[in-house]
Length: 416
Image (tube, rainbow, N blue to C red; front, side):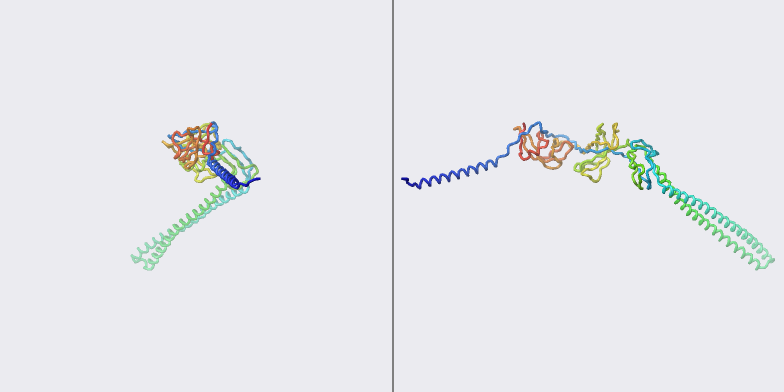
């Protein structure tokens, strides 16, 4: 017969509770420990990363950009009037002189306008000759009338003088003397008025001739303009150089002001570089530059900075101080480097892959244990290949400068 033992059952129950609580505590401790463990440092092949040493010394700040050679002297030839292209005489790439014929255009309306202007000018010239002859004839008639009046005045004066002498001797009545004196005075006044009228008419004659001459000059200017536009139908180079572009074809109709051709001087070139706008803020006129034409390097200096950015770049023109190498021609692609300034006694290193001027960042610094630990740094001014270290590194430190973004979450790597 079985005998019930309640005390043993209670002991087993308590034992099970203690074991379960202990297991739960142990599991919690293990979980907490695992959560505080750092991920294992990943191994990195040393040959696959770039390692540079932090140095102290001089740093030449430079910016670099690509661009092309562009002509300094460009003659864009535009259509002076609406016309039709009859013939393309000279092809692009040909050396030209100012009088070299490039295109022949046709515009019958312009031919008619030039003829009309010539006829108007010829009619104006004839009118001027006719006006001069008519005014000269009128002036001669007026002078003749004045001469007759002067003769009559002198005769009347002589008669009055004679009558006065005779009246003094009592040989002539006083009334007769007065009449002859009045006649002489009247003719004298008429002659004075006629002389004044001659002077005024002379001024009027000059004014009329001047007005007609002004009209004639206006017609002559219009004729010259129409003749120039007529001559512009024979499109010429205008300068010594090379015909670079012909923008029209035979039979094409062009409007006034349309671009017809482009002539450049191939010996007078400059480099036009496109500099990223983030690097262009320190560029100034006169700074030294070097232009790599892939067939030689030419020294130059900055002569113009575009005031506006386009497509996140700024156009910078570089004047060339040395002759270009053989093979250099307009639109040739070039690389340019502009020297901004030379810094002395600064801490610098080869530019890490993600380093930006005047910002903060992180790099992996090599340690004595054969690995690299992530540290924070602050960058200063930068150049094309190097950048200044403001904080976070010391002279002699070795860092990984290649891209390390894939290991940022680990904080440390092992170098094999």
